[in-house]
Amino acid sequence: MSISDELFKELMRRFAAGVTLITFNENSKFGGLTVSSFCSLSMNPPLVLICIDKKIASHNSLKNVTNFGVNICNSEQGKLAWDFANSNIDKNELINSLPNTTTDSGTPLLDEALASMDCRITERHDGGDHSIFIGQIESGNFDDKAEPLVYYSSGLGEFKPN
Ligand SMILES: Cc1cc2nc3c(=O)[nH]c(=O)nc-3n(C[C@H](O)[C@H](O)[C@H](O)COP(=O)(O)O)c2cc1C
Image (cartoon, rainbow, N blue to C red):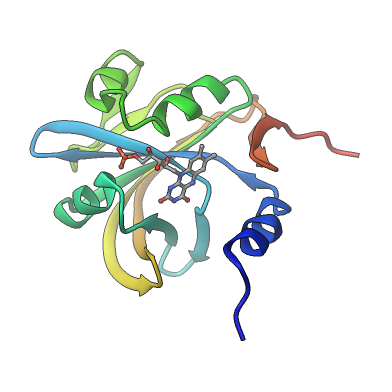
C-alpha cells in the first residue's frame, strides 16, 4: 500500500516550517538554495540535518564541499527565499550582493539572517529521492531582535504567537 503524490503533498503542506538559505563555497564560487527541511539532530555533538532533492544542481555541489552554511530567514527575507529557490538566478552574484562573512572553512554566511551557522558535513544518507546531509556546527551567530519567516501551505509569512 502506498499513497499518491497528491496526498503526500497535501499532508506535507499542512506542516508549518522555518525557512533557511543554505550557502556553500564550491571551487571558490558561492552557491546556495532555499531549504525548509532543516532540523536540529543532536546537541552533543552539535548536529543538524538538511534533506536535499537528488535531482537539483545543489545536490552535486553539496557532495563536493566540506561545509554548508545555514542562514535562518527573518520575516523580511521572503523575497530572498524565493530568489534562492530560483535556479535561474546566479547565487554567486546574489550572495556577493548581500552583506556576508566568509568563515574559516570558506563558507559564506549572510550577515542579516535571524541566525547563521557554519556546518562541517559529517555524513550523507540516502532518503528516497532526497539525500540527508548531516553537519556539525563549527560556528554560529544570531540576531535576538528579528522575527522568523514561516513556510506554510506553499506560502511564506510571519509567525503569529497566541
Ligand atoms: C520555502 C522553500 C523550501 C524548500 N525546501 C527545500 C528542501 O528542503 N530541500 C530541497 O531539496 N529543496 C527545497 N526547496 C527547493 C529548492 O530551493 C529549489 O529546488 C532550488 O531551485 C534548488 O536550487 P538549484 O537548482 O540551484 O540546486 C525549497 C523551496 C522553497 C521555496
